Picture 1 (cartoon, rainbow, N blue to C red):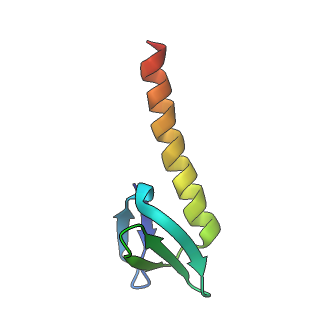
Picture 2: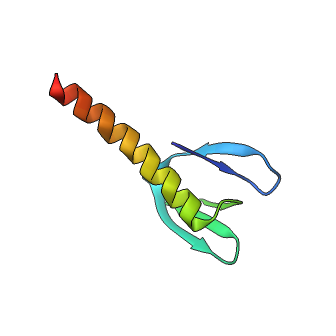
Length: 68
C-alpha cells in the first residue's frame, strides 16, 4: 500500500499491487487493473519511488522469515 494525495490535499492509501499504469497529462493519473483512475499530486517519479519502497519492505520481510 502506498499513500498518495488528491488535489484537495486529502491523503489516501492505494494498493500498489493493482497499479496498471501511471501517466502525466500533465497531472499524474494512476490507472488500476480494475479500470479505476486516480488523479494525484505526486509526480510519476514520486509514485514509482513509493512503489519501490513498498516492495522493498515486503521483500525484506520475506527474506527475514526465510533466513530463520
